[in-house]
Image (cartoon, rainbow, N blue to C red; front, side, top):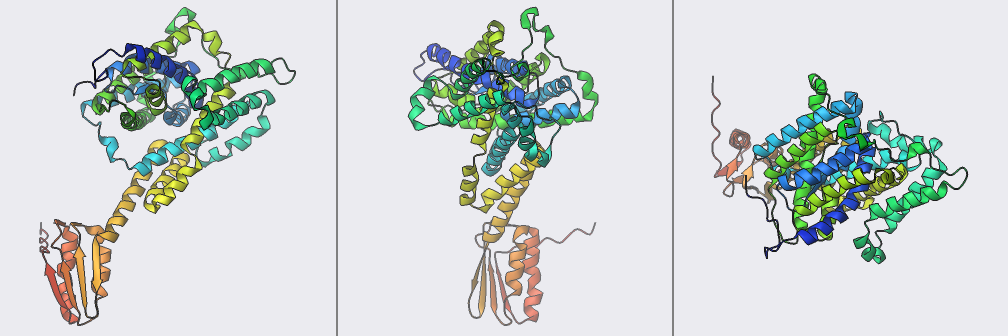
Length: 508
């Protein structure tokens, strides 16, 4: 593997001061998100914090990036939620997470870090938008104090917000809606200076805590105890955390979940890494292969320690850069700060209403799936919009991996259709037809060529010019040479330029 990216500014000066400050800021952003992603995943809330700590303390120095921050990600929440229901327990999911980590280490050693470049941007945009849709649908019950049915999948998710309304509670609803309004207001240009000092998710959680305490004084509006964060008592040590059920590996479903987690987590990490590199003020380039190894080790440890699966996360990474982070040490400090919060002030975290965390996730989901994304996609063109929309629909109807695969098929189909349209230029005159072939001609051009050749009038001059072609598929060469007999029968003078003869098929 290549050397680790530069860990200090180009002057070579230590960056600990800036990194410590940035790490603390990132931990304030990550704290509500770690809890919120665990909530969205249907997992113990402590699992999100465990993964945040491992992502910061371990993956930061083991991986191949300078500024990427790792932890539990919204992109895996839908997979984890469905997987827990499918496998029957969180402990079985931990075993799958352990295997997924091992697979990621293997992918890194096999130098698969460049695979993300093969995924079209339309499919990536669709994947992110689908994650946003799922977050909004799945978290809407928590926003109003109701408990969602974790067994709802597919298009049945579209009914979840409406089914939660009859079970809404006034107190949690007030907390959730006020926090959600604050998060949208936090994006106003007038609050840009405030945003730099106080991250929106933290502001929403602080407001949610204060509002819930105030509502407790009003009869009938108190937030019930079951609607607050609940963390285990760690005073007796970490032995109370759940451990993986490796017996679940005897079930093929566990292996399918592990492969899904490995593929999606690797893809999301590599895409987040590329986005983070573009934001890096020092313009460094990360080592994707080493990052996959680091992420794999992180997921191995998360599976063993009772944490959620992890990825590199662009939201926290962007916050790291904006806060002045310069090296991997800022992510390390963020992990240490999360650990300190879990050990020192767990009682304070238990004052956070779940409705406030749901507001953070709903706002995040809306940002990923905002309507303007679909409008912009349509303006780019159907070849971009179709894979994007198809990915969203397939993810909601099935799961993230099937949805991405569906988007890839649609994108490939759109690319083939565009290639088929533009690979053959037809010039028609009164008594002649001239076909110009592009640099590479394949089977997708056969329908266009067949139509143009057979549309030529009797007695015309037909010329097929392949002088610009570097590659001509056997099927195309066979079609072009095979038309000679038809041309002769119809009195067409037929000329081929630089079209190789097709090889005869073997008799054996």
